[in-house]
Image (tube, rainbow, N blue to C red; front, side):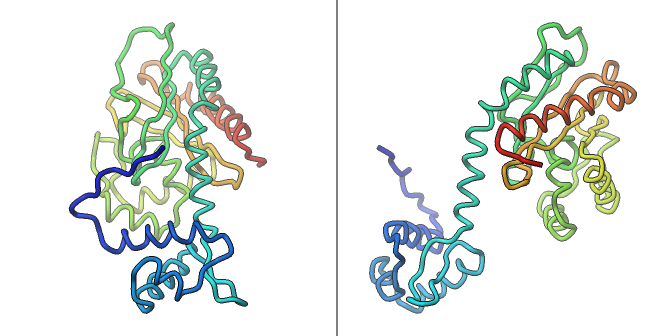
Length: 264
């Protein structure tokens, strides 16, 4: 049995109302009228209609033209599929991450985008790896998207408008002397990433650490995660990255993508 967390004191009223609407609509597979819905959620018809109109605009609910009844929207299916992708992804990707780590003898990461930040969800380190700089990365750690190879993989999928919004929200904080902090320079950099299919972190997040990352696609061709190969610059030189590692990481990312249903 599932239990809800204790109701927070600062619960936003609109969010509570929308959640209640979703719960009621989920119990009415044939749809529900505005009058019946407003009665069940305990809200005036005008308030209920305004909420439904906003939700319909974003695709979270839909209205049947004949009956005028309301149903849950297909946007919720999309979000549910993305959640399932993320829940299954770590287990599906793990064998490929281990193989990539053994082949390159470098640290391999699996990352998702959460709250517009790169979130490490898995990390594999080589037992045979020679000594060198130790990375601060760990499962559960978040890093800014603009200065990590995996983060830039996600940003490369955004439109300029979406990127401007993200920059306004998160900023482009300087982590090292190599961090890209100019919005126009970042946009050009992301355009190159889209063309090449992989991203590089050239000591932009950690001094002395270089990474190369590639996207993982789901069945709909959307980027749901990214993987990277990371290590000290003394081993991961620009030459090694271009001649070997970029191919290894993109090949592995494609293998994982196909595991989760990608057909491209």
